[in-house]
Length: 155
Image (cartoon, rainbow, N blue to C red):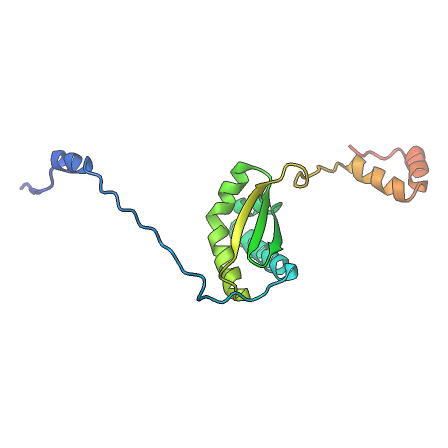
């Protein structure tokens, strides 16, 4: 009892050679959309709320983008400072979600995004127990005497 199928592998493979290219460009006229004022505080507040939500939802992307800095340059430009190209790739996955939400929240749909790689300010310093203790010694020199006396293990 055989079941016959009209599916042909050869015809399927030959059909795959034909590629249809469709160029769809979506343009939105922002002149008619609201362009209300927003502040740097609005931007930072929404960014921090978004990061908290993202931390619970997707910790991998959160860890990749938590060092990003968003700055309001003027009424229509937000500058995104990012540490590495790989982190920017992760940011690109969720940037639409954040910026669409932000544009609706502040009623400003003319906002444009500029990306800038920031090498200096976005490095995370790894603090060892010894470095933390040395910072405390700067604030309270008596801790140095206590360390000499007790010989703390700060490895």
